[in-house]
Image 1 (cartoon, rainbow, N blue to C red):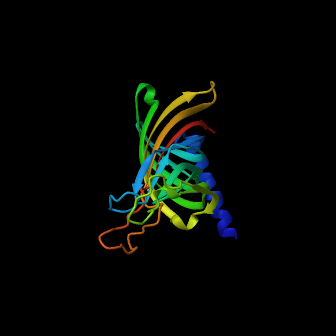
Image 2 (tube, rainbow, N blue to C red):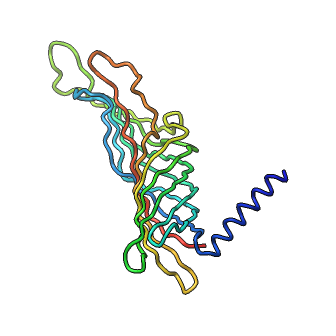
Length: 246
């Protein structure tokens, strides 16, 4: 217990001493996240009715406390620990079954990146780095429809006016098992330092994130004949934020 207390006090002393030297700044940023549209064909076949998943733009949110450590006049390091809620509008097609709705993925992210300062008074920061994600929850909610107009009517004599019916059912699914509990990715970002007042500084943030392995790999799934199953494409998101130096 005494060792833990001593370690905590040492870390606080280290941070405080560097803060007084203007090398470390505490920052807090927040804002919306936007999902980038993607289409994932889940097999290598072009037959009509093949399964595919389309994701389109939806809006989530993030909040990120972080530390900015000044390495030199034109370089600095950002280290953060934040909450991200990424949301996607989905359209999942498989033969005559169409599922439409929203997907929400909540996670804790630990981004780290190096910044290169440029521009007037070095007020612009271009950053490149990576992140680890720790999954909290993943859910999909929407409606599934079955359209019988695409079913084969059979028989030697074609039916000119086949019966067309649509059956629908709402769904609210936990899809956490579709995602890896721990995953990694990379990002680039642009920050612009601003002043809220004579004593309070902040920044504007634009960040583009690319996940590498958030969705579980299904390449081990057996194919049927020459058909090979494919993975859903990894998500890409954009963060727009505003931050303050604390």
